[in-house]
Amino acid sequence: MKTVFVSVCAIFLPACLAIPGLIDLGQSLSDKTIYPEIKGNFRIEANIISMENPRGTTWNYMPCDVVPGNCDPKITVAIDYATPNNDFGKDSVPYSRYVQVFEGSGMTHVDINKIVSKDVCNHSTRKINVRVRALDRDTLSDDTIDHFNCLILTTDPPAENEGSAQWSAIKTCVGHNSSHKIMWKYRWFFVPDNDCKEIAGSSGIIRQLIPFLGK
Image (cartoon, rainbow, N blue to C red; front, side, top):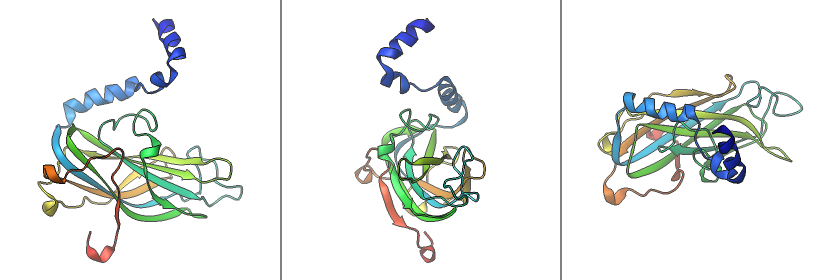
């Protein structure tokens, strides 16, 4: 049976690459016993506050530049309610559907303060993964600083409407390289049918955080 699978994958390689791993499927089955299903029309808002990379390194602990200490970060975000347990890339949200929230040069601490939103219309979920992808821009090719899985669990259900929706406490997502961290918070709430506008990936940056507005 294994030989047959390898032969099929040799012919249909793109399809095989898109098959979630057994660990991903197992986690999804486990989620069904732990997290309640939320169904309907709801909006997810994620405020990506900052990224910490104190040593100026990539995911495999190598320095971003020849002179250690700084990176040229490009940070993108996707809100994934359908495949939250799957790996980054083809198994989940294609990188082309991520929204850029920051691009800069020569830094380790990155202040972002951008809010990304997504409407989910007449679908259900048990877990939401706010995926943050950080790259180090380079002349020849970009290196991966890290991938961050920032989770929203349905044990904290959406508010009845936007007016009653409160922001969560500030949370920390840790990357593959444990010195890499994303600071963020979220809120989510139900929306009326005529106000739900679902598109692929994330709906985009809706505003830059202005602290004195209390948003």
